[in-house]
Every structure is written in structure tokens, then in C-alpha cells.
Length: 291
Image (tube, rainbow, N blue to C red; front, side, top):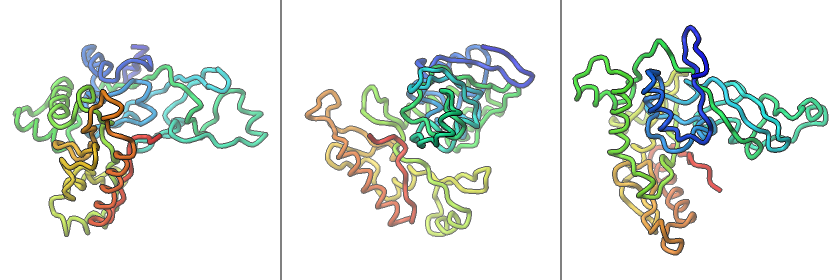
């Protein structure tokens, strides 16, 4: 805990810490606000890069600032939320730097300017989060509402939501320690209300969520499942049988010769994209960075 404000606890974590460990630690200290993002694999330092999110909450909703090092100059610098340019699973760290003009280069003084891409240029060292003192449960997603109803809890605590999220994720997502995967492979697409109404007319059961900006987010996993891909494979790349949004390694992940190849994964991903587009007119965008 770095400091307190009237409305927030400001906590800081080193970039190399495990994200889930940070979430668990904040709850143990009595600081709610991160519980919906429990069990997301990866490190604290990676969380701003991807603007990670789950069950209606994104990192940007709790972000205060971060420290990083400019790999070109060795100088440290700090970015706030606006400078990180957060978007849906996106940030300034996922975009290549633009070549600065001579004037801009002279003004930089070793600190990347606002709006400049930082992909491959910076390494994050610390992340600070603002956790709300006036905490309210985030129960906008159907899975959490079902758990709440099953438990018969009218006003759940942050710890209860944390436990529910962990149970839900463990039930339907493969542990990368046992089944090779990169988590959710496709971003949830957003459409206009008119597009959503058109799809609902044809597919009344489609899972969708209204967004604050008026758009509608569709569940990519539902779209993929509706196209019949859940549990199927192409070569050694497969669609997880409990969650169609996750592509898995059906080969031997401990053997280079018998493990899935990048080509097999991308072939499967391309086939899924084609199926979803042909049926729904929606282009799915991969979430992981492909190298």
C-alpha cells in the first residue's frame, strides 16, 4: 500500500509478480476491486500491455499509473492511464513506435511522448492500482449471477466473488500447466444495436452484453460453439471441449516433435474465423500476439 486518498487505496506491485497472487493479496488486506479478474494467468507487468479483463472488469478500471524503462535510452519514466491509451485488450505497448520527426526527436529527452507506440521499446517495472473504498460488487455477467442465485447471497462480498470467479474459471478453462493454451484466443466482437437485433432475429439465444458506449458485445465463444467447433481438432490443434473460445495443444506439449505447430494453430483459427463470418457476418480478431 503506497498511500490512501479519500476514495481509493493505491497499491503497487512489481512487474514480475504473478497477477493472481496480487489479486489474492489485495483481498487479504481488505482491498476489494480486483476479484473479477482472479486466476488470469500471467504477470502484473503484462496486465497493462493487454489491458486484461474478465467478468465485466478491465485493468483500466483500476489503473493508476506504471513505471517503465525506455530500452533505447535506459531512462525510467511513468505513464498514467491516458498515456497508456487503453482499449479493448489493447494499449500503447502493443503498437510499434512511429518514426519521430527531427523536432519531436529533439524534444523527447529520453521519455517517450504521449501517444507514441511503445512495442519493443519499453519494459514495465512497476504497476499501481487504485482500489475503491466505496466498493460495489460487479455481477453483470450471467455466470456470476447464476452463482449468486445458487448460493442464495443477496449482497456478496469481494471474497465471495473471488471464490466464484475461481470456481467458474477452473470449471471451464484448461490449466496451461496441464493443457497447452494461450487462454481466450479471440476477442469478443462488438456490434451496433441494429446488427445485434438482426442476429437475435435469426439466433434468439445469442449471448450479448450492452456496453456503456451503446454498442453490444457478443460472446465469441458462443459464436464459435454455434458453428459446431467445440471439441473439434485440425491436426494437433483443437478447440477446448468446455470452452470454445480456447484453442489447445492436443499433441505432446513436452515434445517438440509431437507438439502442435504454430501453423496448425493458425490453420484452425482461420477455419473458425471463416465459419463465424459465413454464418454471422462477423470477423473474429485473435487476442494473442502472433509472432
